[in-house]
Structure formats: structure tokens, C-alpha cells
Amino acid sequence: MKLGLIGYGAIGRHVEAAGLENIELVSVLVRRPRQEGLLTHEPDRFFAHKFDAVAECAGHEAVSMYGQRVLENGADFLVTSVGAFTDTALFDRLLAAAKASGRRLILPSAGIGALDILSSAAVGGLESVTVTVRKDPSAWKGTIAETLVDLDGLTAPYTVFDGPVREGARLYPQNVNISAAAAIAGLGLDKTRVVIVADPALTTHIVELEAKGTFGRFTFMEDVAVSEENRKTGKLVAMAMVKSVRQLASTLVVAA
Ligand SMILES: NC(=O)C1=CN([C@@H]2O[C@H](COP(=O)(O)OP(=O)(O)OC[C@H]3O[C@@H](n4cnc5c(N)ncnc54)[C@H](OP(=O)(O)O)[C@@H]3O)[C@@H](O)[C@H]2O)C=CC1
Ligand SMILES: O=C([O-])CC(=O)C(=O)O
Image (cartoon, rainbow, N blue to C red; front, side, top):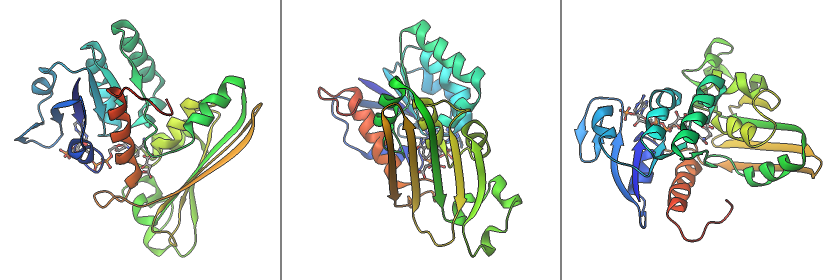
């Protein structure tokens, strides 16, 4: 199968570098102008290829700029920047494009676990779902958090957001896409709560997911090393994308 990649940063580079059996990576779309190897910044060059699947690891803007084109050209679209779907019109447009072309919009597990339990529990009905994301203050640089608190001066944990995922994932587009994935798997973007914390004691990303429903309840916690390339992104995300891409061409699929 032929794969396209959008984004060649902390996530995309690792997908390119990974062994992908039965998968040929044919082109990588980036933003800053360059043409080297498989890389191009020109969308028309990228879309001149025929893909079976395109994996986005680039950001919300890339989902809205290229998602429809990917699906209309007959490829499945794997989205890591799931927070882009806080824009309902975009989400509906991509779902309609996928349906019309008989392809799939795939939301990989990426930086969060337990989406398998959550989506199973949603079948029977959920009462409450909360995602808590804690990162060190540097991860919140360049975000609206800088207007709320002096990130460099923090000596104790500070909650920079507590509310519905639809708002939190829009305000922190590079940091809490996992909350949008959990919301879409479970109670939806408006009823799922996200708590976002800058914690100066941390050197890792701590993510907690708590859910209650007809099935019972579960709590999930992960303590994830920070990627060297991007302090906003955990190392698990690239590993998970390699797993999700490999599954596209794999005979055995675990945790689908
Ligand atoms: N679901 C999840 O668990 C997670 C999702 N994410 C999402 O993944 C995204 C990428 O993360 P990460 O790899 O750490 O980010 P990086 O900043 O390390 O890399 C981003 C890459 O995307 C490219 N890019 C950005 N915008 C565009 C665009 N409009 N068109 C084409 N290419 C573009 C950049 O191009 P260039 O090289 O030219 O600058 C760069 O190669 C995040 O912004 C976030 O939305 C991140 C972490 C977890
Ligand atoms: O890797 C993480 O910490 C999760 C992340 O950035 C995101 O969901 O956007």
C-alpha cells in the first residue's frame, strides 16, 4: 500500500524512519519551502501521487487545508491533530467526503491509552469522562496560558483550563489533541471535561482519564517521556503512529 505523510517533525520523522512492512512511503508534505528526498512543500506535487492512506502529523491547519482533498482523492486519512474537529463544520465535511469516496477517517490512539475501553463503554452509555493533562511550564509556551500566568515564575501547579474539550482543545491546539480523541470516542466534545495543568515539578507528561457509565468505572494514567524534538509532544505519540500505520497493512490487528 502507498502512504503519504503530512508533517515531518517530532512525530512524522519517526514514521518515516520506522520499518513499514508492505507499505511504501511515497511523499511527505511539509510547510517550510524545501524539496529534498520525499519531502515537498508544494501540495500539488504531493497530491500528484496516488495514496491508499495519508497520515497527518502536522497540526490543526493541515487537517482543514488538506483533509478533504486526501479523502476525495481516494485515500484513508489518519488524523493526529484531532482537536481540529472542535470545528463541527470541518468534522462533518470530512465525514461526508469519506462517505462519498468510500474511504475512512481514522483517529489513531496517538498519545493516549484506554480509548478501547472508552469506546466499548460508550456502547452501553457513559455518565462522565474527564481527561487531565499535566505538563511542565515550557510545554505551555506560545499558548494562551502565557496570558494567564507567569509560566517561568511558577512554583506550584497551575490549572490553565478546566472545562469542555470543545473549548480546551481549540485553545491548546498542540497540547491536548488526546482529549479530543477521548471525547470523540466517548461522550462527545461538549460533555467531556478537560483539565489542563502547568506543573513546574514535572519533567514528563502525565495524562489521566476517568470514566463512569453503565459498564462501571475506570481510571487510566500514563507518565510519558517528552520528545526531544518538541516539548509539547510525548514520545509515545510517534510510537503510536508507527503502530497505527503498520496496522493499515497488517494481517493481525490487535486493539482495533
Ligand atoms: N493526538 C495526539 O496524541 C497528538 C497530536 N499531536 C498533533 O500533531 C501535530 C504535530 O506534532 P509534532 O510532530 O510534535 O509537531 P512538530 O512541530 O515537531 O512538526 C510539525 C510538522 O508539521 C509540518 N506542518 C505544519 N503545518 C503544516 C501545514 N499547514 N502543511 C504542511 N505541513 C505542515 C511542519 O513542517 P515544517 O517541517 O516545514 O515546519 C513540521 O514538519 C501537533 O501540532 C498536534 O496537532 C501532537 C501530539 C499528540
Ligand atoms: O503528547 C502529548 O502530550 C499529547 C499532545 O501533545 C496532544 O494531545 O496534542
